[in-house]
Length: 425
Image (cartoon, rainbow, N blue to C red):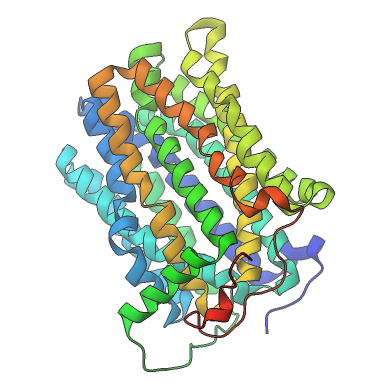
């Protein structure tokens, strides 16, 4: 059994603390790379708008290709070894780039493989936390992880542009590789014994279908998943061409881009801080609508970014969007971990991610295509407008009619049984 500390003392939980530190290190390095790699492609490899968008597409394409079987496989095994293997693979891949010194083709290949490792890691990560802390500490744990991840991303994004200038685009990837060393050491040091899933005669195709039915038939999970898919399509569409917009259209330098991205990222910290507090006052369903729709409207400030005072339009718009996204993720994570039986959590996570993250490569492709055909300014206007428009999905869902998301867990019975999906629930 995991320890059951007071919520305010969760960071005194040794194994959660190790998990927390490893995740923060991973998020920091990933954020450095998310800024450094596009800058490397633009400034060193002289990649065009479409090639830069392909980097974002390849990073998320594995969610569309392998998320469903990975979710089933993760449910069949212990989660921490999966996370360890994924972290080690990511470390090796990142360290290989400056050693090989490849061009855009090699960078795209590494990005694709890193995305595949991330599918395994993230699927296991979401299913692992409930086995590490007590159920009543899940909400606090999710808030701490999301908040600190946002803080690490701020520092990483701010340093990404500067480190790219100092170290060079290729060598900055050693920074990310070193953070996976920290992640591996933290995961190895966790002492909590993870129960091995009970062996059973299983058919992968049937289990994949169970996960998809769980997402498709439950009105709460379906609504949140479809919203995530629509929102991610718009978010990735503008983010995939954002470096080109800021550098080539607005006229900012690499260091300035990193600092602006870091300033915008502080919204995520605020969102993690506010999520549970606002939900306690107005309800989890209403708070979800507020953060996911109300905080998305300022995305329309982003296309107004210019040199001078106008440069503030990007951080203001992105700050609000980031706050809403992170707060929504905190509330959604807590809901799903309490709503879904543990034995189905890997499948649910992978099936929802297949739909949610499957639109990310499509968004990157959309952004690159619009930027190439219509020009960067028009593409930024179209794609940022899609961010608040995605909220229509939630306005048409059951969330609009209730104060709180359900807090009663789903039946632990197999999801093939009809009573798990009551009509009109």
